[in-house]
Amino acid sequence: MDKQNPEVKPRRKRKRFTVAYKLEILKKIDNCEQGEVASILRKEGLYSSYIERWRRQYNQGVLRALKDDKRGRKPKEINPLQKKVDKLEKEKLQLEKKLRQAEKIIEFQKKIAELLESEE
Image (cartoon, rainbow, N blue to C red):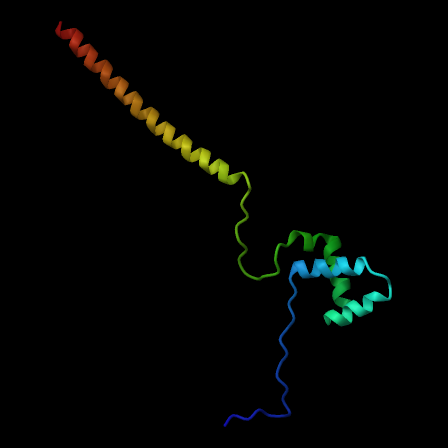
């Protein structure tokens, strides 16, 4: 049987807050009265140092630049017009291919016309 040592307390998991949550809390605190800030902090289980750090990050533009707090490789940002550009480039390549085929057919027809004229 596996007994835990009563002297050793399990490590607490580190709190992680999303950017959306941070911005929401900052907005709540900005819109409340002076005495209500402490109650919001108690209710959410936050420290005032978090708010100071988040406000500093917001003023520096860090929070606005981040989409999500997740670590690791970020998803590739796609320009809204990029899909349209890709579609038009694909269409352009298809049209160029058709143009080359049409030019070959026209060239072939010219050669046949020359052969028929030379036989007459």
